[in-house]
Image (cartoon, rainbow, N blue to C red; front, side, top):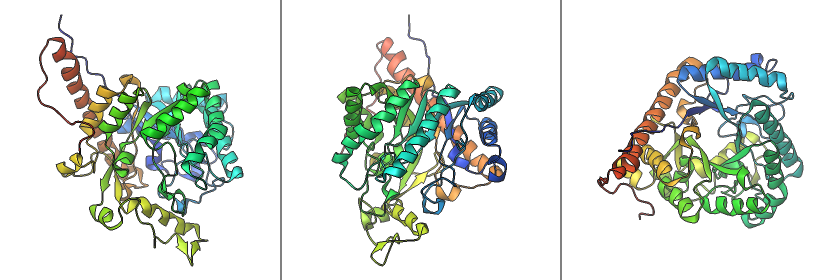
Length: 412
């Protein structure tokens, strides 16, 4: 019997930080779960299957002022008050009403912050995120590892054991998976440190996972892969996935951000890696500026080199794909199916909107932009699923060779 044609598609989601003020603060602060209800309805209008629910310290509690952030965070999930059973029931009712699921809860912060008091505050908040995920029946939380940028990365491994592994044990107690997003976060400090999230490349993912296995939390440590950061670091998706396959870790990736990167060739020619190293404007008179508004300039380490892409909105020179200067979305989705161990139909593909000129805080203006990007993402995934089913299942089952070579890893 021939192999049937059965393409398998990923659920398409959207991170709620795409529109921080969908529900104005004067309405959501006194009624925090209204923001989640309205985002679920908005996601349904956008054609998304799921949301990645953004959590963050409320502006009144945050240690980093909004004006110092490159991408202001959204506390769509407001955890100033305990997320109790009544709140969870209300959110689950909205999920049922809209038909839009929750892929995971996302809290992106530096969980190895060098200041012990600030670190403790962030860990306490993350535990509240864990509790909310458990009450909602969501199986994962997404975030960073972070870094103590006052000591070398090598020394952060001890910090990881002493400070981050206990968080993973708390996740395990709640039946949760912790998905690490791999942005290096160069703008988190006005110093010269460029890698401020030690879970940034496959080499550290594997090293950290081995530590987790030693402490019986290997199943909790997973990666939420974002190809935009690979482009930032001169990598390409297929080669990264091949490394994981070759090293015996094709199971590590369990979620995806759909966000591209458009390289600024002039910026790379002017500054190279690691980006703009002086005269950024985050220092004044030989010291870090006392004005937190100046600290956003630390992000010139990154933004001088490239700009985030909202999938479907950028034109690309085909040569850019070959030079790893843009995300080849079709091959990205093919490589995921070919090289990773995925339960495709339960692996979220989450659109993350950080294209600066289009970060419009106006629902009606932003709606067609997000709608188009989500539709583009779905069609790319569908095309890749169909190609994979034909090339890896249907044709081989009948002994029919697949034509051509395709994109290969480790090409130079």
